[in-house]
Length: 446
Ligand SMILES: Cc1ncc(COP(=O)(O)O)c(C=O)c1O
Image 1 (tube, rainbow, N blue to C red):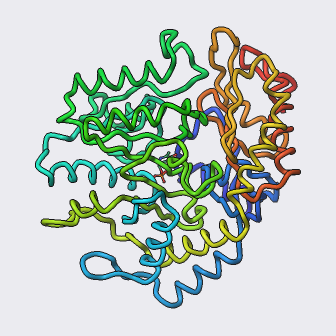
Image 2: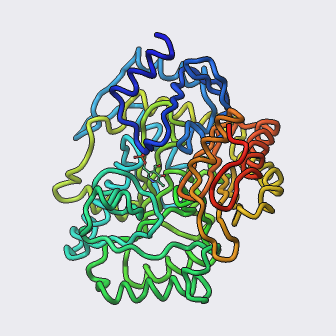
């Protein structure tokens, strides 16, 4: 089928998540190799986003993964893991995850992706308390600017207005706290961010009542919020308060796990000591849908005791997805991609140094192989410039795919990105940003 015909069918039939009316062009991606992808018109694009969704750790088009999937499809495509049944690949992947995870997170519940994982973690936290005689513990603490997914449950935890309009204004039993965003000093009334946030957390717990709160959820580093790293004392201080009140902590590592920030799990080094960890994306590098929630014996035993955990999806522990997950983790390990993520971060820091000096750039944040470039019209007032047109111009003028999240340009490439590709990415971003005026107009547009 021609590119024109595909694009016409796309316009007629596909509802694209997060699409704006302002852009009519299409890039129908038909092939990928490493960090490069090609659209139906034959245009080559450098993917500096990991499939435009923070994944694809091992790069596109890996034969090793295709072989693992094909072999499993021919041997056993599917058998349920409900009740007494299981399959060998889901067992092996669960054991592998327990090995890689922070100590004490030995039990695994598979999902089809991140949103289902967040829903699972919320239900697990509530049921844990219920089984232990505290059925009133139903509230969830989350944060503004946190992204946790688009299903009804995970959507209520997500801290962006667009999502709130869809899930409804009166969120059931969810309280949103201020995010730890050191660049946005205006959030903290001139106080130290951690002091402010810990005081807010304590007041919130007092207002709702600790006996009514099941868990708090948070990304170790906020991804969709714009690559926001908390101050180093934030998570340890939060953990301490939650411990005092026996409130569980759910780490949403859907973006950060499996190397994105340079380690298998990011929550460990932030001092979160989470009770539950939600993963997805990098678990299979996006080759097939799969997520996994990791938890310790204390919670898992409470869930599986009594009448069992009345929760699970048909595709739990899908044999092909788990075979792909195993092959993917092998590749990440064998090719040293955790170390490469850190290297990519160094190249980004160096490559974005000139951009950081531009008047429209308020802040450049790099965490392993991911970077956020926050755009402002005025460095004193930190008034945002929305980044959508900048991301589109970087793609159309330089054939480099980056993402925009609000007023932040985000880079999150496959972890196989090389130095030349990193330089091309940061060079493209810097060139377009040098043409960005404080009113958001891009001069000399494509
Ligand atoms: C931190 C985080 N949590 C959860 C999700 C939801 O995952 P999914 O889109 O696989 O449902 C995402 C997706 O981007 C995410 O970034």
